[in-house]
Length: 388
Image (cartoon, rainbow, N blue to C red):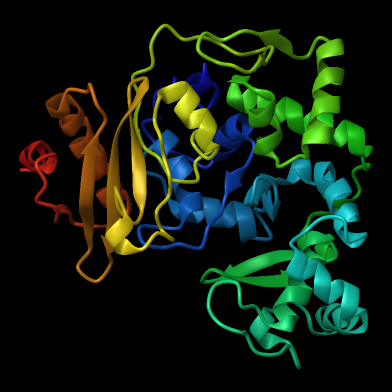
């Protein structure tokens, strides 16, 4: 049910056209973004996992081309690409941020303590047009890598949380901000604003469809609702007959069933999954459904890593059967396999053959000439043989 809800019970199309992108978003609701680029930016991967080879410029156009814009950036799950039609569903979150009730503390702090500075940053965008943090006058210097943001960047991010500005486009992976009325279609901005309660109910409906079967925690995590809000809204959806409470063998928690959830006879998809794919981003759910304990080890010191730096789960039929540490060697145009680990109980030879096929597909999609297995582990032998 979880796989069908996420689109993995549907065969990949022979040709992944522009029309296929909205179909994926209709299923998953939202695609998470992340800055790590060891392989490829994470938001490109969920579409590849479901559609196979597709032109990534289709996603770029849908997100940033003014003539073809179908998506916008906001805090959905985390930083996310979201269909434009859903923009009104997040206005309550923007209002919370404006009241300093939502957002990261270091972002709220600059709005609380330096409001005149923040207003000046907004005025710069109003007068100068789309700007990145580095293009601000007197935006300050960053305090270091990762989250050592400058005061200007923190001001921009608070304005972004509060809906005062939005992402016009990205330069590399750097956000360039502008006013919503200069970025988003007027017909979207003119849509009525639902109440906070109705917006949250609709987000939970979308989450329920995307999960198929889910616990309360799964549902609220999908769009990062608070536990208190989710509890109330789920009860309201239950009363309205829009969710059904069920018991799932092996689950301690109550399950909630989406009305349109389907149970395919068999799922035969093979797919490499982004660490931030909506099928696996809630790690407790991944373990509960697939018996697959998954932790991202990017921030773990190298000598303490168990599976590798950027590890993708491999979906083989109805199980997460392996995990593969991948890296793109852009200079040599090679897809590098730095590690492969099979789950207990799987037939390595069968999985390796399917995995080799999927790695070749990924390499071709990324414009790489070949796949190179760098690990010499016992588990990698069958994959190396299949790759030839």
